[in-house]
Amino acid sequence: MSLPKFAALLLAVLCAWHRTDAAIWHVDAASGRDTQPGESRATAFATLQRAVDGARPGDTIIVYPGTYYEHVVIRRGGAPEAPITIQADRVERDRVILSGADASIRQGRVAWEPVDGTPGLYRVPLAYRPTRVLADRVDLLAYPTLADLRAFRFLDADYLGHPHGFSHDPETGHLYVRLRADGRYGATDPNQTTMAVSPPNGGGRFGAQTTHRPDNYNLAIPFSGPAHVVIDGITFETPGIAGIFTAASDVTIRNSWFYGCRVGIAGVRTDDPAFRDRPTADRVVVEHCYFTQFPAYTDIEAITPEEVADQRGRTRSPYRPAHWQRKGNHTVGRAWSYEVGAIRGIGDRWEIHHNHFHDMFEALSDAGRSTNTVIHHNRFERICDNAIEAEPRARDLHVHHNLIIDTFEPISWQPLDGPPLPGPVIIHDNIILQTERAQAMATANTGGVFKLGIGRTNRYWQTPLENGALPEEAAAPGGFWIAHNTIYHPSGRLLTPLNLDPHPLRGFHVLNNLVVTHTFSTRTASGGVHFDGNIARFAGAFPSVLAVATVPELAAIAAGPHGRAVSVEDDNPGLHLPLDETTALAPYTEDSPLRDTGIDATKLPADTPTPESLPLRATPGAEPFTLHVGPRSRS
Image (cartoon, rainbow, N blue to C red; front, side, top):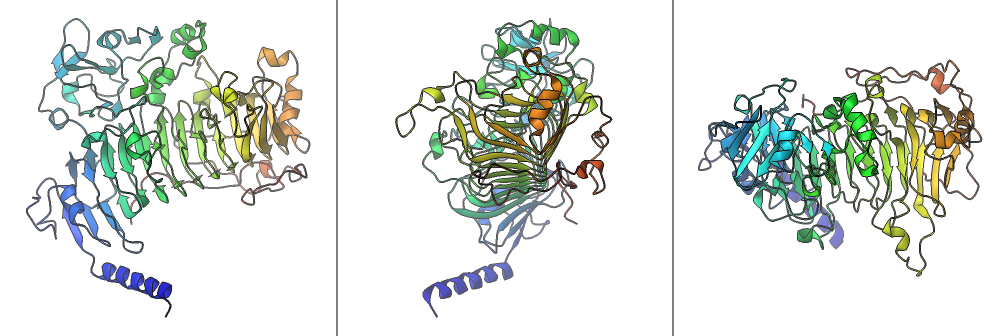
């Protein structure tokens, strides 16, 4: 027998031995003790860390109901056929909570003191500024100073806020909170609710760099290489940085909830000095999880017409978008901002599927060094900014069969860090919808379904390429492909093109999509975007565009040579897409008018190589699919 075959056989035998001899460990915060053997619930450990330290390949750790104020570190992993599994005894929200919150405050052992002079203002002693504060899962708006909190306004930026939030005053050493006085989100007195106050944030400009504090993460896998760890059914709450951090590969995270997390799941990033020279965390699966920053979007929805008018009166564009209270650059501060996204530091061959991203500022906002990542069958809903970003340099990114609802600018390709630029990116068979509820929101800024390009003033244009020349265009390596999507975004635009002459885009293709938006773009020039085989309708256009083109002409541009421009006056059978918040998905049927258009398959220029993984069919629009997202019972 050859040595490689013998090694493979030996590994198989060892893995089988682990499976046969695997142990089940029990953890119970209410009745356990770490001095017990942990072999049954009656003899359970008190802490998850104790069980993790003793686990071997093939072992399972069962965690019983309770709140675990721990920062768990996994120091060794399992084997390919014998992973270490950490699971709640039953999949149920808040059944097993791994919390980074201050225990004395969360358990109500410290009373909130009312402060004279400002209605609803309370405080507790606290020596640091927390990253997040939750009031019964309501993510309070972070105000930079006590004066801002009193005014419900970002005073230095002269920018509107919302009528609930928190701030920290280093002079008095107190944390201050104000809950909504109208009771919309529950209690108005913090003494009558569960207050989860997070640790301080991390280091760096965005507060997301490792500081070697144990409270940076709820759970960390800090070693490199394969881990073979499964995490199942845990609720993660208020860490300093991330609910889960992994420097290791081969990790599965499923059926879990993430609340008050600046980042839900974080991999290795090159801008983190602690892990700059480490390899990426690869082959991570994130499935059937739930991520939220409620009420980040709901707060925006509540903006009054007077507040919108306040934004429209601004002369400086950075203050115009009414949804930027939580962005960070002009308000809460970069180190506490919400722009870091639910998942960061993606490596090679991540799979993100069947998750629910709900009421957030941003969902997947950092592709980092990602390669061969697949994002499919997720539901992105009520997102203030972007659902998915390909920047700064994602490679072989596949996005398909996702439902994206009420999102300001769903898909972004806006690299800011220079070459290599993101690509190839393949986006197909997604359904992007805007509900009547979102259409009724009178915000001070409208977005594009696809934000594409690099702004004129970006340093990219002044940075020489390898041949010494300055860049002349923004080209997506391998192409940026938008095919067979159904897009119903009637109060927004199809494109937000960031490139201006003389710097065009190159390699962007919009093929066989169904498009209903208010506007084609901020400009008539497609700037390197190739359209073909689409069905397009636009209800109106910005005056600057109408000066050079009519709405039907714009629709014809977006339809492409083998597409069809649909008139505003047409009845448009099949283009009405009813959806309400209780509907998981309004699937299209095979006999839908949308699927019987008679449009030929897209004919691309002969010199355009199409990826093998790009499906091209004779009919435009997304194929039918169903969604079952979020945590699910193991039974």
